[in-house]
Length: 146
Image 1: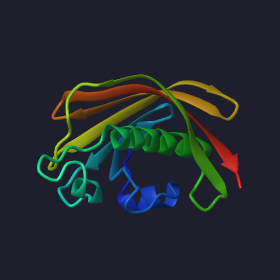
Image 2: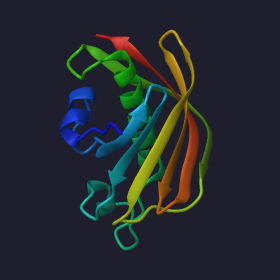
Image 3: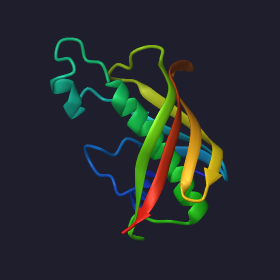
Image 4: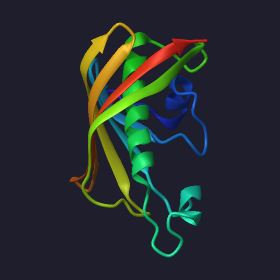
């Protein structure tokens, strides 16, 4: 069961605090990955979303799903953050939000490749908290050589 620590993730993704949205990779294969994002009350977004009733924004749940998908693609390509390659979010389809994510939650993100055509990936991803679905989506992303 392969896994990745936060330091190994930082070698793959160029994102840094506060935009690094994947804390660990629990397991992965060629076209599948399971990752986590711990949502703490110390997230900067909770200062404004919403101060008296904090809810983790859906767009950041989607970002964590895209980052998990980019890690999966990077592992397949053997790419690292310093390889002068930038992953870009290209689209999102079939998004469904099922329940809010609150501080103290551990989001489990599962992503799998649906299709890869040249430099474009289409993945199906889900985000769950305590085995309850919070979000599902089909994601498109690509990369650009710098």
